Image (cartoon, rainbow, N blue to C red; front, side, top):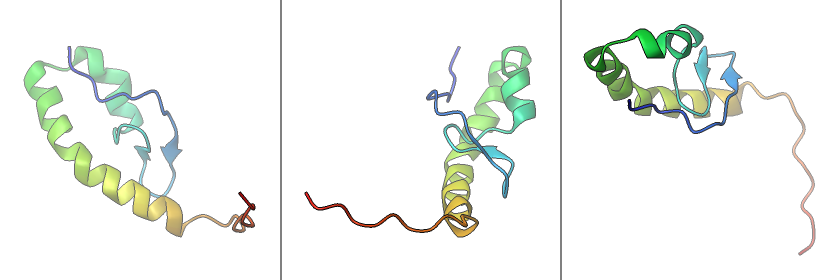
Length: 71
């Protein structure tokens, strides 16, 4: 069974998507119960979701920037 999980499980509150795979909690929980066709539909949506999650996670961050470390 194909899975998009890369073991970087962190939900992005601004989008509701996992930052690692792009799925919602509902999709992650039900993954084993979906048909191959249903999983395929979700897999096709993930690249756009991940791009959105990455963009929004940076926008919503209130953490100060880390100072540069000398090499």
